[in-house]
Length: 289
Image (cartoon, rainbow, N blue to C red; front, side):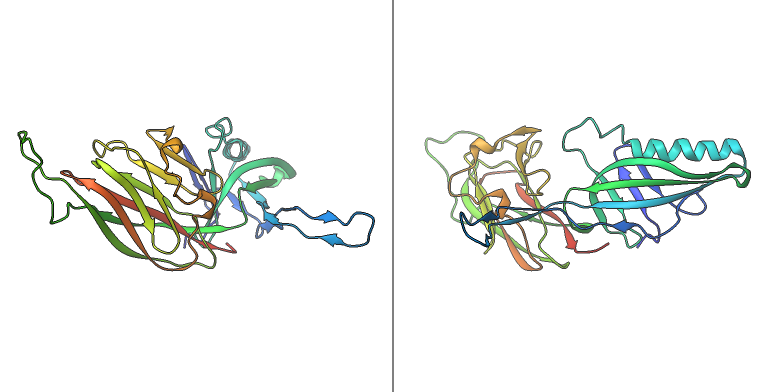
């Protein structure tokens, strides 16, 4: 737990403490999450036919107090909070996110948006600012956890003829590791697949979802990254999409969530050398900050 609220994004990592001169005057207002639906009216009759409901993000309202030892000091606090909320390093990058970090250490992902002064007392060297933070979804996420499994050649590997030097062996092998997801509700993991893997590249979280690829990984310098988070939902390698190399038997990204529980990660493929491995990363998901 941090004990203070804070804001993080590329180039910015700040906590709003009394000593910093920018602090929260009251507990943030956490709005209801947005809901869209497919409801339809019944033609020429009373009532409603309910469709699917979809939950979006929410707006968190924050009231900041600013204080300084001099008017120049107060002006600097004002410039700082406006700069923090401006988000210049992310606001022109589609998909880039900031983290609003609660006093309990949980993060909401989204963007800082509106900010404006609501009160000023220059003679007391005090100001008040009202700000909004808009979240990508309705959840709060804990610290990142990870688990890793390394793929090793199977015992039945042998030499391929005609012989070529240096001699290597290759055989298909599976490797597994268990991990535990905590939290209140399902979370969205990120999986990274590192080579070298010659054939049969894939992974599965048993009982939940599986992905297979028609890709070769020549080494571990450019992993395939499967990011299931709703505000990302991508399969990339070296920053470029490789979704076209996903086999049709694979799960959908929107189905690749993990409710709290104990799971087994399986990596699949054939490798003759190096340290091929799968890394899964996740944050436990919570309904409140």
